[in-house]
Length: 276
Image 1 (spheres, rainbow, N blue to C red):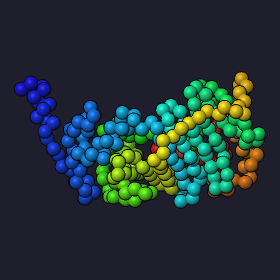
Image 2 (cartoon, helix red, strand yellow; image 1 turned 90 degrees about the horizontal axis):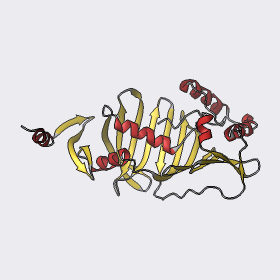
Image 3 (cartoon, rainbow, N blue to C red; image 1 turned 60 degrees about the vertical axis):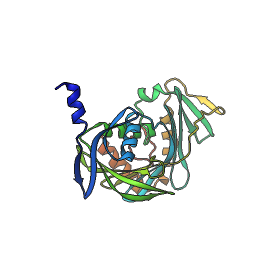
Image 4 (cartoon, rainbow, N blue to C red; image 1 turned 90 degrees about the vertical axis):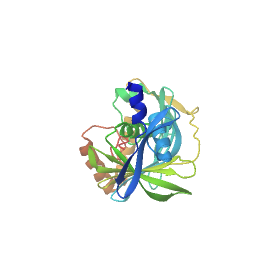
């Protein structure tokens, strides 16, 4: 029998698995030139979008909490390689970053102007931000590429104005981390990702809006040679560190120790380089 015939025969097998009381059907299905091993059309469409990197124009909100206490939240936008992140606490804006083209812009709250610096300087200074949507989505793609990780449907759930299908993604090499994602029953789009690991919770929520990211055009000041704009921002914010709640400072220290890395960050934020 030819190799082609064997493949045709094998593609006809359907294997039923019982996972957590729910039936999930595995098969080889072709969806827009993408071969999916799931019969669930919601899961197939989402998996195709993740692996083919179609989820590149999104915006929403990210919230990171420790012991059910919000540490920080971010209004974010992602458009191709461009990103915008507005970090906030309960009271005010804490950091505003715009990455457009080959430059990064950082709001200077001392004078209301924007620092401008080449993107390559982030790598040179080994700067990692607490959260970047592009990194977050890249980590998610890596998990989906690993065929040893498992995905299963849990239940229907409410997510904003939509009814969503809630799925769990279990990682072979990290059983302490729980990842859930929510797909809209209306249009099969991704609405939310929830990550739980011990006392840490990350909520990644996506809106229906189509983002527009514009680089600052006015009140821009170019960083000097050898100047790290994030260090400058750190020094400014550190002047206000006494206003930072003690539990936030303690949480940041714990996360720094867990990550075992030196990361330039605002003192209010955990050292979480988009750690999905």
